[in-house]
Image (cartoon, rainbow, N blue to C red; front, side, top):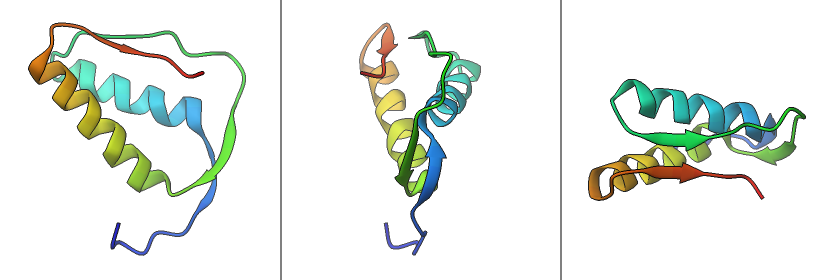
Length: 71
């Protein structure tokens, strides 16, 4: 990213859930079971959100189902 976004503590579960919900609204068949606890990581949330969104969009475009899991 050339956006110049600063890294900050972010809840990865909430971020992934947001991206998954957006993908589902576009009709993608995305399977995701969020965990209950927060997972805070220091990252650039807008950049990660864009990257995850691109991955889900491509997976949905070239596949029939998308499975998302945090390990």
